[in-house]
Amino acid sequence: QLQLVESGGGLVQPGGSLRLSCAASGSIFSIYAMGWYRQPPGKQRELVATITSGGSTDYADSVKGRFTISRDTAKITVYLQMNSLKPEDTAVYYCYADSHLRYWGQGTQVTVSS
Image 1 (tube, one colour):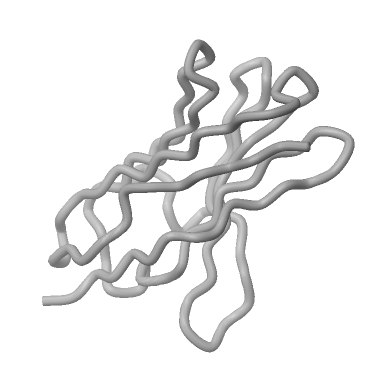
Image 2 (cartoon, rainbow, N blue to C red):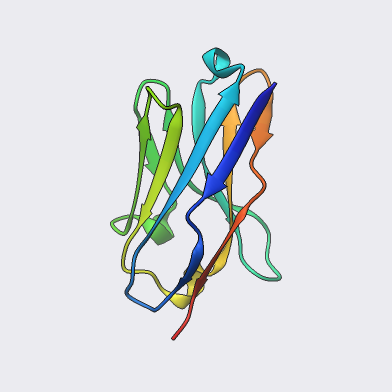
């Protein structure tokens, strides 16, 4: 079993920045990838960014150049640094971790509005 706890969401003005954190606990040794999805209001959940155990990263086209995913292997924590935020980035952001199953965090709200 894995447990994922997210933090760092909130309200920010357009052009601002936020950093999301996702801390994993439990059967952490089986994790081979972690990342973030988001679900905008009234829309389907979409992949935002992923990072593998080897450190490879991938991003949705809509966030490339603005978002950066990173990890702290000692703390088993994944971060999503979000810069130049736009209103269309407003969504509930979910952390996930892949081992023999996919595990999800509880979600954290990010609202970009003036």
